[in-house]
Amino acid sequence: MEPAVVALVVASALLHALWNAALKQQADPEGASIAILGVAVAMAWSAWALAGGEVPPGLAGAGWSLAAGLCEGGYFVTLALAMREAPLGIVYTISRGGALAMVWPASALWLGEPVSGRAVAGVTVLGLGLGLVGAGRRHGASVRGVLWAAACAGFIAGYHLLYKAALMAGAAPTAVFAIALAVALPINLARLGRGGAARARAALAARPVVVFVAGVLCAVSFLVFLSALARGGAGAAITLRNSSVVFALLLAWAMGERPGRRQVLGTVAVAMGAVLLGWPG
Image (cartoon, rainbow, N blue to C red; front, top):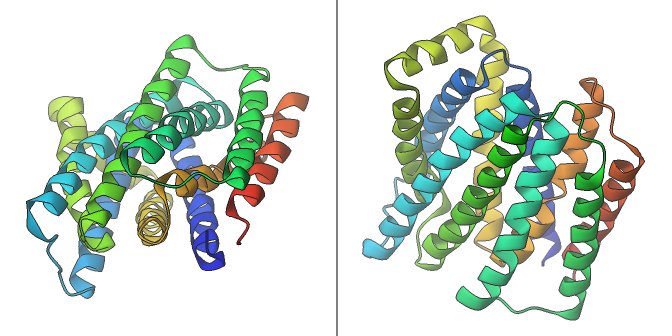
């Protein structure tokens, strides 16, 4: 991966961890996730308009973008449910690590992404680190929380691969993201039924600055990542983006969660794996 792409992915990882931490602090994560998604939708469409309002070329780009939106919708639903049932560090580890396990082989087989020896070493070390983090103590995590986080991993893997397919079809990152979020928002509203909009408004009214900033961070993190994804392989990009686990654990510590020794060692391994994977040359 080029150094500029590495920088974009790591920046996206930090922003992503920040808005997830903000979601975890909300009294009603499901309602807050809709409010955050609403802000992100507005940001995405504004970015698309500022970029000239490019339309994805042909049915392929539009189709992959719409399919990515279905996965985005599932991602926001399962993320909010997992955050309600488990600590930030556990949710992040399971969802990002599970997505990594699914995306890397799929990107090599389906998208034809080359696999180098250094990349394999990076994935191996990073995967070991994620395993160590997941093997640490799980105080505060229910079985349902773990299962929702695992489901979240599947949706993360899905939208990464579908975003890459849309970009390979020639679609602009801003257009892909705007279309996908336009699909994701009504899915989340429908999931909560008639009270969904009211819960979103209540979450926004309770902590307007935090929710608004989280929505902005959400949109920017995805747009930055899509820009990087357009220039690099899907497997390498999502693997390096798992450096967000490091940021998430640090934020979880600041929020009062206390990781065990295995989680600390795993965090170091995650960082080492990200360096191996993203090292230029």
